[in-house]
Length: 459
Figure (tube, rainbow, N blue to C red):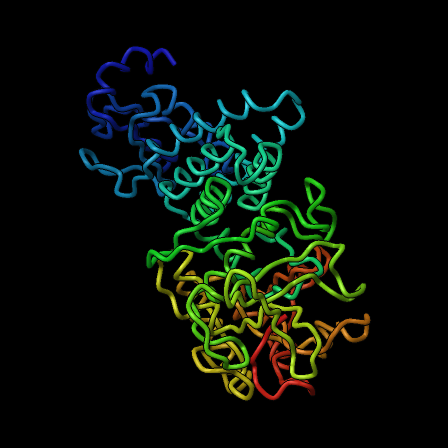
């Protein structure tokens, strides 16, 4: 601390602090021996825990303030006169964190809620560091959440519910595997939501900030997605904060409605092939009082032919279509629209049932190859289509519908052949850790359900 105070002025000029792990045994540990420039502080600590690393980074922040760049390594000392090669830019992240912390302290009276909020911020940053996430994404996430939390306007979403949303965004950014679809046929977009929170949490936060500010979201190609006014408040399942076990949060409700509408509001044909104008189709969640029965999820595809005529899309048998009519190939398009990133390799399905636009595997070995490739590319979570008639996802046995379902592969160990899967039916439905499944069982679960000829819709 004394060194930090003494060198603060020169550090402000040089603008960097080296935070390094212990040197190899026998080497001099003085900063002079390693060629550290004037104003740099060498913090030495053991490699045993992330807590130690974060403590050293905290010292660097203390020394130079929030407007500096800092370097972090765990690979030993650089040679004399060399700079540490890998630098993590903490400047924007530190400033953004401070802004969000200030907003949290101003908004919340409850010390418990403050503490929990800051706890999830810490957990989010630990996850980001372990994952190797760019610090600028952490900064952008905080900036979007701060704007949503601090806004006084209540035109579109009430202040109370915006506060809920900010808490839920931080919880889901810290723990993407807690995201659920609840009693909605939205597994495909839920899988995408969990992937985006894992890799691009800033995109999820931006979506919610825009929706709460204007009721609209601007996609990567500049189109406007508009949510129905009735959907800008929690539905029957999102009435609690946090949402109950296995239930969909209000943050996920808004994300999933926006994601589906990002696709349908640009379409010029409805699911039946009937021509419409772009912007005439919308995906909505109707009120509890308008449900047709206990099995009705409240989901509707609605066509607004003009200002007075609205048609609800129905199935071939005349029943109300209670799902987004959304397949995996469309998820790829929506991923780009929400993030601006083109990545076509994270969607996989069995070739015997896959629709076009999805990476296909034809055997257990080709599935192994696909998962190995995704792992080497650091491209998990990857979305995979499975059958709910399988042993792993046996919905019919529990009274649910048989058909296609989308889950995320979060890890694959080629040595053991074990696959970790994130599901959307509550944490106990996740197949991770000791419950990770064999590659063979996963492959079997990707085979075609008896009531589906092709992978047309995942629920």
